[in-house]
Image (tube, rainbow, N blue to C red; front, top):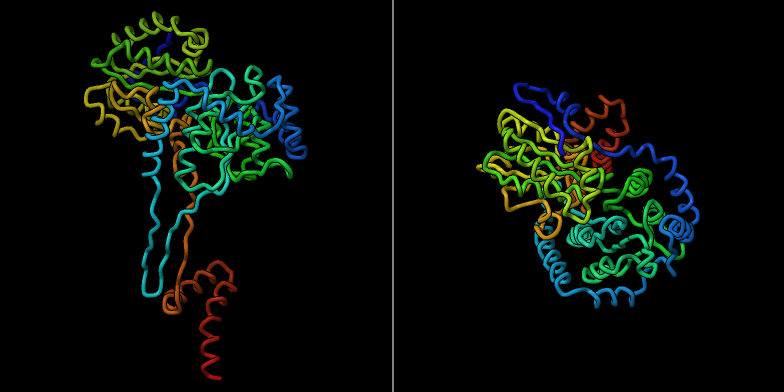
Length: 441
């Protein structure tokens, strides 16, 4: 099922690897002409415009934008005990990891009377987008809400599409998780119109946010691009992807299932195996073909695995495997090798790294404690996944007294002259000239 790229006997450059490795992705630019009018309509028409787009795209119009408290309470009451237990465990583990990510303020003493303190201020109001569509994503509520809460964000709102078969409200599992997390404000709005409403708000019904986070389809990603600057965003998330570095010690059945598991997300999901063992690669390909059909989402899985974004990459050795993994910069990278931890620590570019055969990506999707909102499409080379840091802004407090300023006054004046901004220097001179004039008087 999986196509093969053979890099053995080659020493490809990073540029060559970027061109040759399996890669899918989405062309966000192509849908901007469709999304831009939606953004503009909601910008001027507010909640009512958003609801009208929902009626057109989701085929349902809820009675109100905001989900009533009694609907959310009912959703909690209807949770199956095993599902509730899983949700509570995921919340606890995710909260523990993200609470320990929060940095501490610190002060740097530069000289007598000269110090700079870095403090961390949370984003005040955050909008969390939770998609509907092909699956239900209560885990996305946890992964977005918990780090914002741990950062100290004062106000959270979740936006999720209304469902025709759920009485016109978002899926009840989504609502239940929001309630368990203490998120009481949920909007029954999805798609690009939800992102627009989060960014621009409505004078009467919906307070705008300062930042929008969360995954979504290509239209949601395009909407986030269009509102960036009005609000902050986490990223323009693309289709999910997994890469696996494996050697002869790996279990081909487990590796096959891990490749299949990510392929069931989306027809454009990417599943890539990197190995120096050709026989092992053949066995994995056989197991994938043998087993994918039993999943309920087999049609979606097959399309993803046969797509150009998925495949097997044959390499000479583990050293080359690490180079390939770094060039690919996977959203999720699994390492199934001898000394897996050692290999994992050599990888520089990945959204999250899953070490060893008992740390599969589905663990990270739900209850590992790490965050599953991660950079896709190779952007892990320069960006990070969602975390407590995402919702914090470092702010410097510059605190100099007269002695501290005098010690560097001539440096500031020299810079001002070099940059032909003499008023900068005069602002420094004035502080000492004024003291001298007062003393003379």
